[in-house]
Length: 465
Image (cartoon, one colour):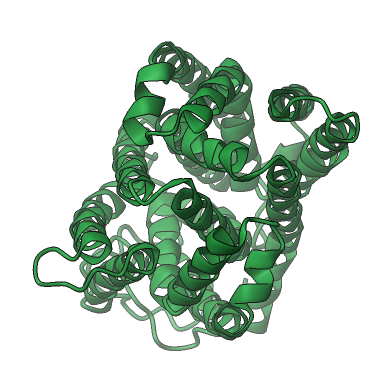
């Protein structure tokens, strides 16, 4: 790998052991728990945001759901790039090459902020056209366009902490993303309440205020992590010489391209699914947004174990120990299964009370409860998907997760949902299409991981077996 054996100047504080010295990664729970705590807080903040916006009516919830979903398109592209970052940093870190991990992080940060900057203009200029895709009622569509325009202004502020946090987790530091994310989320709640209702001397901006608050909170996170990284206080220190390497960029692109295609399919599939739901009106659409936010308390557990599994798999492969990598992946999956089953059941049992807490609209409440029951039932399958997809990405196998999304989400869920809508069945049948999606994806991923072909994939010139 370019730069891996050249210019070995001291990368600064926090650089870790010398190249070639392997230090085993922290335990799976040690890695997963801070990430779970960070994302639980993020989900709670999302629920609070929806609760605050929900007081403005179902149209406001639909607008925020639409704007957030479109904002996830940016997140999807960043996830594609950081899939390469994760695979390369974990493999380099496992091999004891701290300098190459640092160079990969810097290169990824440059690419991610550039992509975010490019996507700012379309979000600002074409907000109305993007919002009109979902066929909402005129007022909800106007509010959605406003949300999209405001949140798009902060794309770069979102990209910076997203990229640095991914690199830190790949190196085994899940604590720094936890506490910086906690500060960001506290700021978010304070500003959302202030800008939506006009409190603390801030103007009352309604739905636009929620988007502005999110963006300003991203700025806080960016300043925090950039300051720590630039001063050399993070586990991965900055390296400013020979940062951009054609070979390094090609490797990021090679690994990230399938992940990018996966995210295009993922986000396109969800947008298509939301479009089908929108055919039934604003209430089913708002119910979907509320239900997803409530069950995100379970999703983030799977994401936490996904990060831990990805880090363990990548670092063990970097240390040429594929057997330990496989054990780590299965253990992370088992831990995610037990936790997500318990959380999904608890949320499903409390669904009526939680739905009424979020919004005072009988139709939306009833549909939210139905959606929670359906999505809660597939929590075990989601645990498998989250963790094994993450483990494969950590190994550099980004193609197979793409194939599972293409098959399950696009091929199965959208087809079943569209067929139910064509037959004019109740929207609950459309919601239920996701069950078939997760059955297909979890089956494919278990088979792939068990066969072990991912252990032979070369990342950054390194192969484990």
